[in-house]
Image 1 (cartoon, one colour):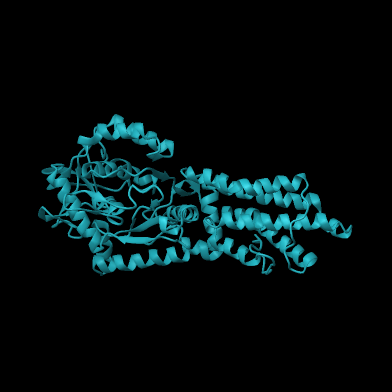
Image 2: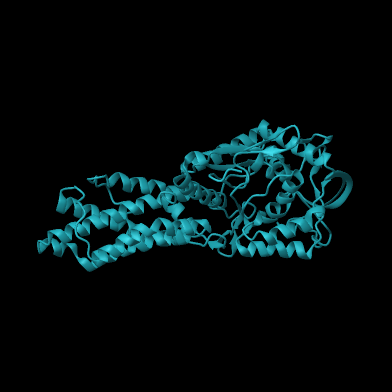
Length: 495
């Protein structure tokens, strides 16, 4: 296993509908971590995977409703995802689709390996089935004939299927989670999984669907009458994208294990129960960390396609700016908790943090360099105690951000950056550089203006993973020795 590498994944997004804010939240967080790690390790040592999950009954139904083949429908929706990621500045290294031939062949190989090991068997199954969730439930779980997850009606289905031996590995998984506190994060999700595993006996996982009921999927290599359950197919993408099995069934990859797999908390069980057991059955190492973030709510309701209360990320980015949207998502709510989304909250963040704090500091500094030094950034001058204190803050900032992001605490990292911005703004109000100029205190003024320029250059550097366009705009205005003053970065939004 290579140490000098960083592999990060998002979940595969389902193509039965267009992308929404939840998709963009996970992907922007992954993009931020990827950009940060490229600065630490070099761009060739970071691999950021995202993509789409394109098989299953929901896709088949959506395609039928649109008068298209499932492949045509998937192609259309994938184009929406790729277009959105491009507009949001998402710097993924590979976009995988579960309809890619390489992935389809890889899933077949995985099924063969697990089947040959005796961990897949055929059995007749009778259960309550939820088509929207593509999941079977017991009568106890769906006692009111409604799906426990989506609350829509279930139907009784009896058929022959293939099952994967989840239950066989339950004790092993509990032991692994207990011995590896970093495996599931945040801690509330780790406790949730441990509680579920301790209180329930796992049922074996039905990993097939009969072709007469569902034709849109990867055929089982050992049964021509069945296709693969969409979750078993989709989870495999994390290893199919970056490696392969040899003829002995041994997996190798430069990138695996993943350093972190970012997911929403609604798919925690699939990633923290099914996925590690699948890997164990394959003899493949487990990811280092699975991090399940919270939901964005509108009022008291979770934002979701089925409820019809989704926010279009592109609308928000076009209305307020891409970096404003990125900043709001990463700053407003601790990563891992639920948050309430509103345009009022975006505007408040914009006017306070971006216009008043960052934008004001940049513009007033550019104006003073233009006025007092004809656009040339002055040389360093003598340092008083306050100046030394601020330079110490500049020097310590990268390490503080590194510590915060090691714990996936995007909000804390941004707070550290803003602490320096606010310190610099306060220093302007206390020092009153216009008085230094009037009193011909040239050395003090020179030192002061140079300090502000150095603060802003450091802010631009460390802000890049979070707000790449803003960082580049600041960098373009503050050259090595002179400035190119442009328009204010964040003009206030009047409400």
